[in-house]
Image (tube, rainbow, N blue to C red):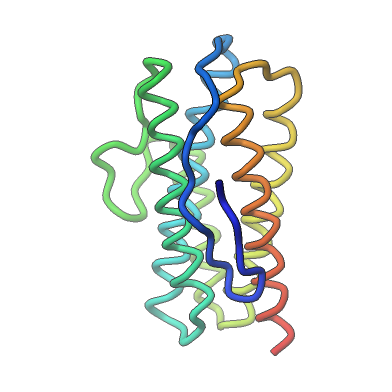
Length: 166
């Protein structure tokens, strides 16, 4: 189960306790998108951590790495190819995801305040996407993970907002 320190953005380890269910093809496509989103967040926060002295980026990047591991477990469970496998930091198989990453990274390089706003944007997007993905979902394991990821994103959002007011 994921927990959080909303102040620093850290999360506890995630695990999948729920049983495997069934996913429709659109739900499998969404799972692929979730893997990409977790990698975008991880890679962005890692890059921004290297540029700014704000521990929030390091801590949330570490959380995003754990989140991606859990999503990869789901991809494997459902026999879905991992779009992030073998991709270097900042590299994505989907051109639209690559363009989004590049644009967010460029925004984040404008200064620490801009980088924190990028974190807010990424987490708000993740929350909206996870909320949409949960609609009509019946697979217990995927529901558990998406619910945990959404909660983690809410904590990450609060952490970025907290840092923005410093």
